[in-house]
Length: 508
Picture (cartoon, rainbow, N blue to C red):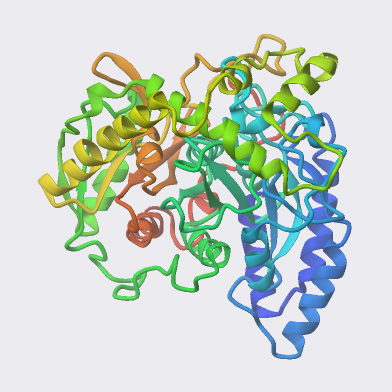
């Protein structure tokens, strides 16, 4: 079953032709089958109450109580987002396996209030890819290795690996991911789904295992831009948050008239010429819809980006934020970053067999958020990403969004075909000032939104069209992405038009 098949079933649920319970039972069978040797292994656990929840929501629909446009829809939740019993939240680590959150994360509370039901929890890169500089995207001690649905010998990227792969493989129509820098955009691009990194603060992060107060966000991963908009609204608790612009319809000839889009070719374009060609074709579609293309645009501060500043900020915030989060869980588990380091050392046979914990150890050595090193690094990140970065280029060219490749092609896994360190591999990195810079870095450091939409395939692997905006322009990005998606693939999106993933396929 493909993501397109799932989309047709969800439409039937909305119309009442199929019950939520029927959809959930079918998906639970699908997830169970994904645990076999040909599976992508996207889901860590399913919700024992899912069928009961679906039955209750069907009864509400029958009684005329419909909570919203996603009433009765199942959603997968990344396993660093708190869910109350009977589900668990581990961050992929055995250190959290023995205790549970005391309550749902705020975003999960919002989803339930909007009529969605939690189908299960997705695997992730352990600790959201922030334990080691040699971490493995898609691998956790608890969940093992998640695979790319389009090619099981390729990476699903991370850290929202299971959320992206789960939607692409047709295990659920909707999923929740999190991002600090690239963790929604890269797996969505590698797995051929829509992913939105919202503006910092638009979706509440209370109850989410943290890395950084300056950069952590929670966002939707879906089959279409319209579904992403609906899920964003439900996640945020604001019905208007993801609303697509009502001033145009799917049949308007020039729905993007007046929209100005800039192409940052010098620094944020693909090193893979075939990826660039697919994105060039997507830009032509945007122009045909009435958008004005400014080609190229220069981002003044791009050559100044230094990973050291961003990592300094993340290290300092991780130590502080993680201790605050751990205090919210049931008693008996670790309470500090030092406790987690000690746990991993004591259980090295399950936690440290593939890579170490040098980031944890580096963060443990930090001295708090009043440290001069932290404050100066944060100031530089804001200046480079906002003031002299995105704010500057948008003002200079009066832009609504930047357009670029979201990532290069999914890279191969290790020689064993199961896992291999990928910290030094290309996860959509481009060149700026002669150095590698991810397309996601500036929006991440700035706290600004970014959207990726599937726009084609190269050698059977998905290519993502990236759209980045200023703070609070999430709806603008969704409008542009939706107009492109409808024009290029029709209302059902890329899942209906592109060849679906094939289990076990390898192109390497």
